[in-house]
Amino acid sequence: MTPRLELRNISKRYPGVLANDDISLAIMPGEIHAVLGENGAGKSTLMKIIYGAAQADSGEIYCDGKLIQDHNPAVSRALGVEMVYQHFALFESVTVAENIALCLRGPFDRRALSSRIVELSQRYGMPIDPARKVHELSVGERQRVEIVRCLLQNPKLLILDEPTSVLTPQAVSKLFETLRQLAAEGCSILYISHKLDEVQQLCDSATVLRNGRVTGTAKPKETTSLELARMMVGSNLPHMNVTPSNLSDGPVLEVRDLSAESRSHHGVNLRDVSFEVFGGEIVGIAGVSGNGQAELISLLSGERTHKRVEAIRIGGKDAGRLHANARRRLGMTFVPEERLGRGAVPSHTLWENALLTGNRAGLVRSGFVDRGRAVAFAKNIIERFGVKANGPEAAAQSLSGGNLQKYIVGREIVLAPKLLLVSQPTWGVDVGAAAFIRQTLVDLSRAGAAVLVVSEELDELFEICDRLLVICQGRVSPPLMRAETNREEVGLLMTRLGTATSEKSGLALQD
Figure 1: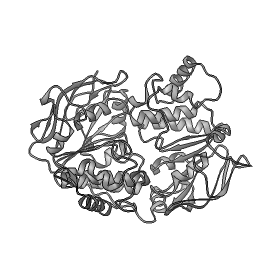
Figure 2: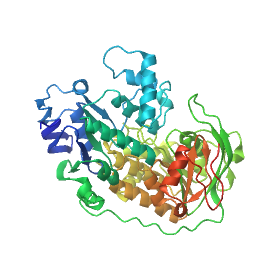
Figure 3: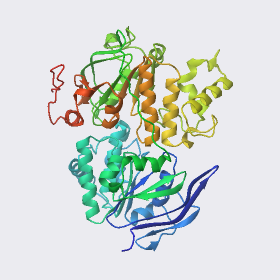
């Protein structure tokens, strides 16, 4: 049988970096093929080359036995190749339907297209509103747009980069059913994920990359996750050490009857949100993307203030009306979900990005930037948190996703916060970097800080959190002790399919 896609000796070099080194692989019709590797292993570069968004320096690409020449994304789409990028390719100022229409060939009817989007997204358990503008969507909702956009094209080869990072267990199962059905119909799927259990469950074969080279192949269903991880990183993964929590006498963060109307017509209104986070613990907020997480985190971080000053208290002080800088002076730091654009300025150097929040650490004196101190501050983060970068002068956009995330998390932690808010801490991050970041959050909490984690990765929340909350349609459940709940109960709360309760509180999440 002729491979649907075949790569022969693909190499790609950037200044100072050999991103892909003589890579060869083949994907058969109907095969679900995983590409595994750490951040910076060369996966994203290889996917861009396959899709035509980047050109290889050497090597050949064949589709259904025919050599692809003059390769670009338009050629790929004409051949039936579709891709969902990890960093999305969407225009923020227009609607979901308009974004999808831009990828269609030939004329279209906007009303009919919107109906198709609604029907397809609901069928696959990823509901989206075609009339919403992209800038109003969370990261998870944008990922849904990308996946639905590809599925509307009836692809012959579908490239998916971290497609399940923002889905509930139930939605993941639904997506896997869809992917298996597509594969049974002859569609080949190139699947990139750092969730090795998913790879084992879904994929027929896997190619492992390390430092730009193919270091091995495997049959995931016949290989343990430990063996796959060892192939990816070249050594055993660090073991998570989660010691018992030792809570502070009083809460560091208090949220009391917090209600707020969304600033977006299509957003989610918060209703009577109440919870608290003590020093020495990690509290996680689970939920399907687009259920009020963005609205809540903007109010907690100070990006948006609240009319009731007592609705939010930090370190015992009313903070509802305080802006972000004032809250940071109370000991709060914040890691946003979007690395590029909110967490860092892409084109600026790492030492310049250190100034965004580290300016209070003596990097600015008498209104002037102390470049020497800023460079030393950035260098300390790079060394302490194992960030792979060409020094403090490297541009933020030159780092892989995992390394930039480690830098941003490190920048906030070296400020010694009393309260750390972190949204999607390991989204799109490889297993090694994810383990490092999670252990760093645990260590920070055990040193006495209060840590609030907003994440759509249930495995992550169950691994590091002491207590769990679930947000759904702008309401937050009573707290669940991690040891007294399970993924199914939390998953049901996330989708409002049940009324799972906390045995301790006896309260259910109700409308």
